[in-house]
Image (cartoon, rainbow, N blue to C red; front, side, top):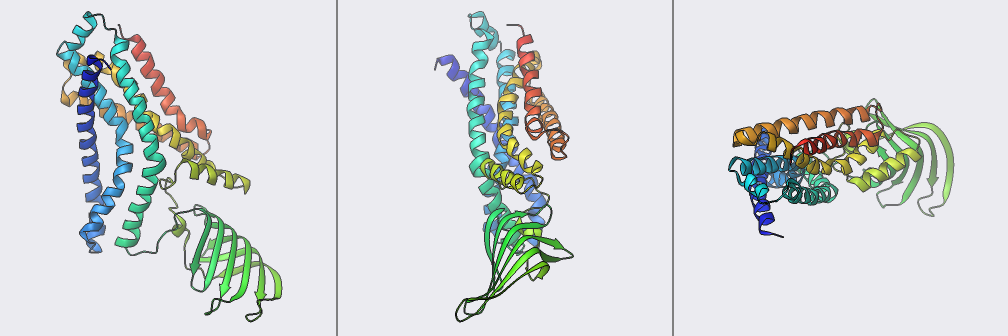
Length: 360
């Protein structure tokens, strides 16, 4: 690494680090005022405040990182031009491509870091934060984090669920083992699916087997079209009904979407979110591409206020376009792959075009 590259990256690192700390702090502050009523209402301990916001930090960093890279590149290049340092570099025979390459390399590395966050830290942190708020603070029943191959106990019954679909209030491939107080098997119910209707679960297309308590031998077997169950859980206990699967990583979303497709169910939302897990981190690189031409065009008048304004404006524009395309993907107007990647492609091509249009 040359002295010039170290100088460029050191300046970029300082600005980006300060921007990341500032945006993360603002996000945490807003989230604190939004959630503080829940903590105060339930008289939560101070340690739960800290634990909740620490667990939310990976998600916050992942979301604001593209915007901080945009601001870092914009203010770094704009500041160098305002002080004529960029002019001196180019007068010394250093082309624009050599100047911007270090920023693009770092943005690529941060894209990989952001993907790692989304794959490992964000799902685990979000799940823990939701557990703290939902269970430890509000005192509600603990939600089941998994969506497939679930084992849980309710009263004297042991349940195994192949696939939970909280969005439609269904449990697929359910086996129910009814036990007595000595944990001896009384009966077993195997149902094609459980449907939640009128605040009660019903087993559909079920086979019931009764067993002798002493010998454990099968005594009776019969089929029923529907049977009510005393399961003390709601679809919301198997995950957020309206959430965006933030507790699931790419591998889990892919497995769930494949399972839903095998069951003949609509997996559109899961497939869109699955592709978004790969597409979202690339916003870091896209923001770097966009910041370069804007910084060079506005360089003479660059200051902190302008840098923040331009960065936020570009970031909001990207977020609006991305959210709109994702919504179109959820409604099956666009294929999941296109819905997840279209915003990156549009703004990436715009950034490349503006860079190529900039005079060297």
